[in-house]
Length: 186
Image (cartoon, rainbow, N blue to C red):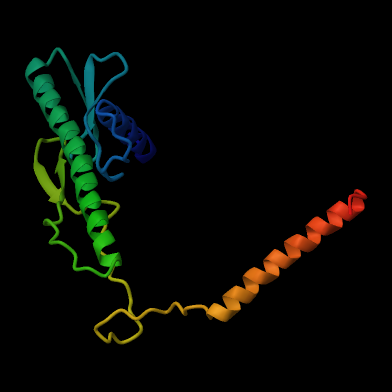
């Protein structure tokens, strides 16, 4: 099985596994990971062994076939759990980031989860997520803090405000007089 075909199978399997739960996030699998797949006629299972060789097991070899079905279910469950875990953690980080961006202390974050991977032999291992999960970004503050928030808004001069309002009213009156004069009313 070529790498391109393995990646295609991974994507298809992930879409099927995730689609059943209405998730829209991409699956958390790596191209080097392949999962056990049914053949087109659903009479055999195909997978890559640890040496990278394609292995096909017919349903007639019921013990091995049933064992592979169980492992395949574990692989699909791991994909679903990884997607959900990544979404939950990223949502928590995004919510904490709102506090950090507002200048408040971030709430404590849970331990960063690791992706669970089930090999074609049924061995479970844990690895970092690909792409990596979000992390908090502390905003850069260039000015030293004086301990209080100072207003950068200047209050307008009341006399200038009155003059501006008077100018607007006068321009409106001139426009009304000009319009009435054009119609011959004035």
